[in-house]
Image (cartoon, rainbow, N blue to C red; front, side):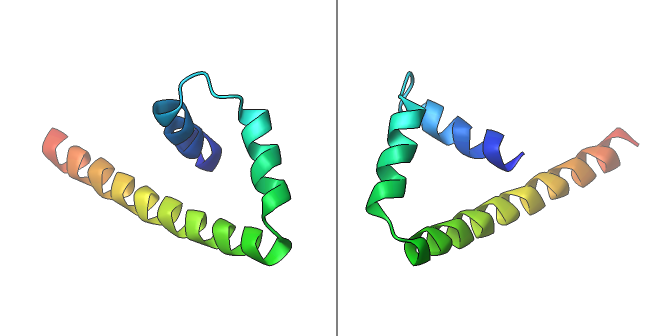
Length: 65
């Protein structure tokens, strides 16, 4: 789910982007600690979005009853 969410961001901003080239470029220009920080930031955003989707699901369940 994490991957699909962020690939949607990439595809939405840059349709037809060369994902392999972009990932290689980002990996080369960031060191290990920078990549860890980026992963934590992305993880926090994904977690918040996941919680939002859960709230929507619960709201829809209540509406359907």
